[in-house]
Length: 68
Image (cartoon, rainbow, N blue to C red):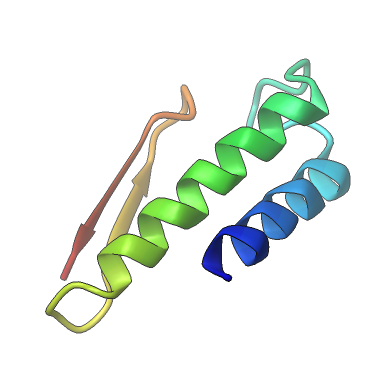
């Protein structure tokens, strides 16, 4: 279930933003995969003990997600 929701959210982000961040030349498919990976990481860390997540996204689209 989470896979389908995350995948559809990733595809939606890819369609809406058509290139993520400051690098607008990234194709939609790669944007969708990146958004799905980000959503999956946030979902995983949100289910760990703590009160939320801390998400850091750097300018090269590298991200770090950890539970609070």
